[in-house]
Image (cartoon, rainbow over all chains, first blue to last red; front, side, top):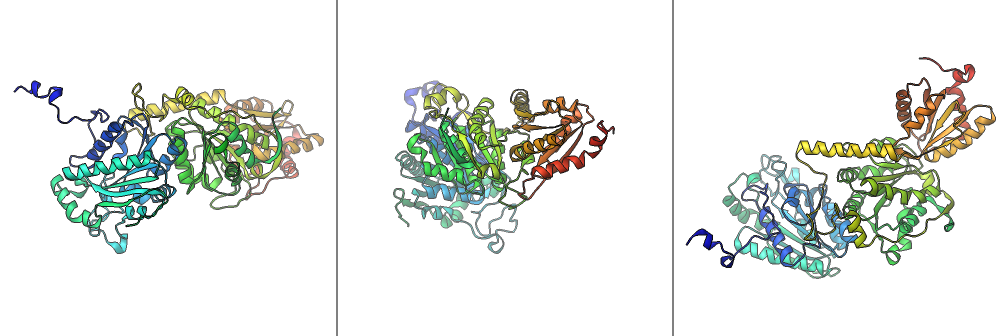
Length: 261
Length: 373
């Protein structure tokens, strides 16, 4: 069969969502960001939300997220995306607003903003990419860097006496009555990608239903920062990151109700 | 005539915001301006106009809420006092860099550091020269009465949207705290969603319809050539402001040999000073800049042709005096420019200013001719 016949529309089994444009992504091959971007774009299309959606991009590797998904975007200052999203969502309650943040952005410089946005129960979705390292600036220690993990600012491994402990910020978030749905997912296998998509879909629906803040952590790889191949990164993540940051739903309720697990 | 009331400057800011159709206020308490948010919260404008009022967890969060809300093309504002404005300065730089309109208010207190809660004008440099990082300017309005606290809210929004640039009302603790008669503006409705899209849909994050390209609000540009072009565009905009938006008030300047230059609270002190000095036979006038940026340097250049001296009266160590010196220098004038002021939250008295004037310009007063340098 000729290739032209194979790619006829009736033979399509999978198509890239038109909301994900054709720009070449700046992410390193093997990075989890691209997959999470795809899930978001697919869901915004499937749930018919393009005209309602406003995305807030962070400072970090996903600083250029606005280049890839065909919706209105705003670029926040480092760590301040939840405050920016609060401003957007409060005066535009009919819009669907989400932030997309990394671990340095959300769990280090932006701890005040994320805690208080979640505590107020802002009707926003927070996507939290946790790869345990600062990718954009060249592989420095993040608040979520594991004990003993080598980064450019912990060249002999993270020493908890010097640097404190890897922060399970999602567990803290789950304690806040403003949050409705708090979950930790990954995208390192096909099954994990499908599961993560279901979680993000549920989180978006919660926001649309005004149930409070929905928070999806995605435990991710940074093969460049970790100095490993993509395949080794996935393996390392399974063996080291996921035992410390176990996957699964932490909270599934509505704003104002405590459901701590 | 609109409704006339006796109100505090800070309360009037809140009332004027509601009446001018403001969509949102985001703030954090700090003395001496906490009455702004307190008044708003007590008024519950969300029941009346739909205006959102939110107490943020910090000034950093408040300014970023303003940044987010302003990007959607709506009328939003914050207010704070000096230390809080320092915290907001990063966000203000982002707002200026992303070319967003919004209204900021600084009810100044004395610094540096935690300083004092008493009034000051020591944030002049911070406000008119940038404050945050990068080459940007704010439109700066300096009220000298409670009435102007009312008037400048609407004017500030108008100029902010005209130039897609943050505007700041630079008040001080005295203007914020004192009560005066004020004629309140008539209420205007908030813009409808359709009006926002019509006015600002070309740049604002209103949600992307299939019919237009996505709007991206950012100050980031990695390409140096394009970033320079952005900066040149900003500079063009600032030149237009300098051309079109200068506002000032000249008081008995026509025959004046000595010009007091003062804004805000100090300009009120200087009105009395002019009276006292005139009673002594001294030809003294007062120039009150209303816009601190753009600075009224054209009128200073004109006045410098015949004036013997300028005295900048400030509640700071002398900041605006540098801009007066620049204007006089550009005019090629021999007029002498000096400064008198008080700090630490102290307001100079008219008597002190007359004494300073007589002392500083004793040579000119004795000989009546210009000193040549």
